[in-house]
Length: 195
Image (tube, rainbow, N blue to C red):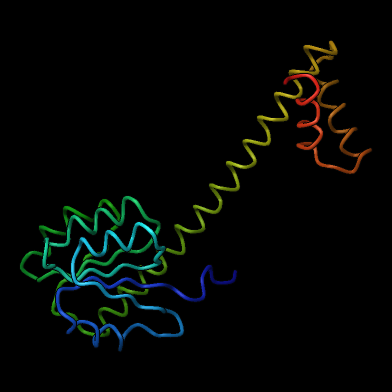
């Protein structure tokens, strides 16, 4: 299976720019680009409203909040990986608040190797979730198509006095004869009989 995304957009939220050099060393520009950087949660929220990101890294505490609320905001509203970097002494308390929402919490200070391994876990989890989202979308489309076809069968049963088998066979035969999908046949039936 090919990778879902070749280039991941990253938002870094941190009060100080010191973390940027650390992250620049770890985040491979062939996989993670572009990086956007903001210094507080309010700026991040404004940016997140109109932009899509694949990864949000929050270096807590922030200028205007602890960072936990922003991590929860991102995880609940967006389809992206969220990493929250917190001081070691508050790690357990923060982790218990955010882990049920899919936020990956890391204790500072961080080694590059430790962060890199955690980053790979976040990417793997994000890829897995994207596969589930795509499958869910595919199944919802299929379900909607089945609903339309079922409504068309009901129209044939009601207006042309067919039984269910006859209605099903009629739609299949029309699709084969006209070289179109059963959904297209169903939509045409609904236009005619179920305005």
